[in-house]
Image (tube, rainbow, N blue to C red; front, side, top):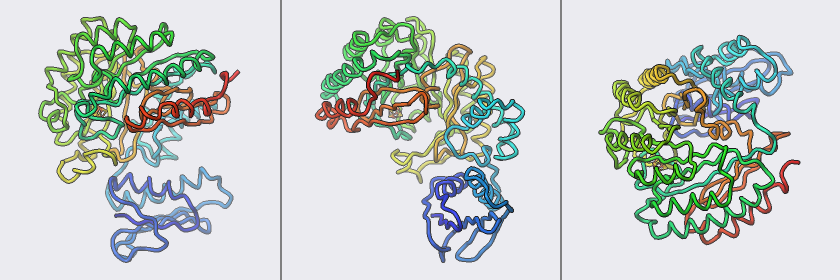
Length: 482
Ligand code: SF4
């Protein structure tokens, strides 16, 4: 438990997230005064001094401060509050977080904003490294991603939208998973009913989408390929009947190799799916067992070759660095295997210990990588991406990521997952169908975002489908933005 106390300001979120960078996966508790036992961090903005103090068992052991002029804007106030805590905890822990004071999920967004204001690249890099203490190689990564994202976002038109379809079933639950995902064995008898309900929602969304230009369809989950061949065909057939799927990015997150068959790959190809994901996470057998994936490395290779054989030309592979028990050498092995397969995109995640995951429950039973080891792993992944001729094109961060690093999508130029960028940058409306899916309405003029949520439970979704549709009737703006 870490206690924190605010004096002279109310920037609770900024204080807690900055502390979290140094002490991830603990409990954080705001108090009015220093705790008599344990560690307390005091953040203070008073009389022209921004300071942070560390107390252990009620005794002050460390302090850092800087001066400021009266009348500073809120953004600067936040920066100073974080800076003081950063310097304090850097000294206390000996850690030097590579993203400096940046704790948000989209580090590239700051650069996008600066580029849009007409600032040049040198200014952007200096802004991140000097004002926000970001390490130079991370600032360069953020710049590269911001430029790649701008190319995609620059094509956006006000009436462009995307569609997300959620299939919340998986064969087993992975150790680190916090998504809406239900074990297939238990829900097998309800999948058809689920599809029937979702088709009603899709019918409504298709009628609504006629006023717009549908640019991307993304079928995710869960694991969409946990549907049987017949069910997958029914789903894709329904989508084809309702939407014009030509000339768009049409993705199915095939996901786990233990759910993919040659026939399913063929069905996807036949219905115009032009981007699939086959997600190994690691190419090390022992780790696959440890994280609860019931497939082998050989399954991954087989499925990948089958996908190529039936004509899939844009294949993404998701990887996770820092999985329990893995060392940089294991990542080297994974990347060698991946390079031999030669996918078109890779998405390199760093492990996040999410609240709703088994990993969080079993935290004490697993050995997680140190920040130092993760940094090596990220370097290895980036080097192999470069060797494969890929460039970074999107990036995001999550809370409780081990080492406070980042997730990066790399691809061969022209093979960017455009839906990923739209989701990340929140510049496009995304209609969403399925249990746990949330529709995001983005006003293209003001960038204001409204969300319409679906219930998470499969049972509730099936029985309350009319209500889910009603929520959209009420929440979606009528007749587009014209
Ligand atoms: S495949 Fe994905 S959604 Fe399914 S349990 Fe694993 S992490 Fe969760």
